[in-house]
Amino acid sequence: MVESLQPGGASVCKVPGQISSPPEMSVWERLGQVRSMSVWENNGDSWASSNRRTRRWAASRRLRRGEPRLRRASLVLFCLSLLPGCALFRPAPRPAKVSPEEAARYSFPVVLPTEGQHVLPGRIAAAVAFAMEDFLPLGTKPRRDAVPTEVCASQRQSYDVTAVPGAGAVVFVSFSPRPDACQGLEGPPLADIPIVYAVDTDRWLILSVQM
Image 1 (cartoon, rainbow, N blue to C red):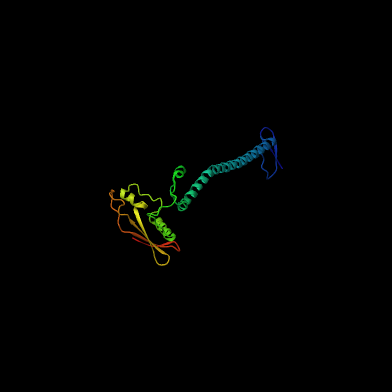
Image 2 (cartoon, rainbow, N blue to C red):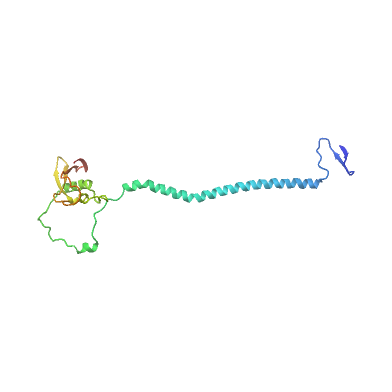
């Protein structure tokens, strides 16, 4: 231990190897400084931890705000992906009917007239309907800028139908324009070449189409 004399007559004892504190700072002052430094460090740690929590909260809030948009976008994409499938499963058009009031006013004859009567075997009638649905599907509409003859050609009543049984279960169905159909209308005349379908009435397949 070494005793040194400081200005003002105060003496300070020093231990070799020990760094002495400034003489003007008492023990309590040094303890207060250490305490304040510790508090500052703790406050710094708390501030950093609070800052991290704030950043995490802001990120989660942004994520929550974006979730409805993400769900809406996913729903839109899901619906768009279903559109082609929905188009394939659209119900087939049905024949239009009059109102119930008009239907109630219609009266059928007691006996169907025999003049002009056509009796079609079930297989022949089904083959005609089957081929017609490919030739002119129900609900077919002409394009907007179609000329009158094109509008006439898109109507089923503009064609005469001939059905002939073939070999086995084959039925030939021919569609040809009626001679008096679409006459005097603006536009190119209809071709008088018939269109013939070969229908397999066992498997209900169109074997071939001759044009």
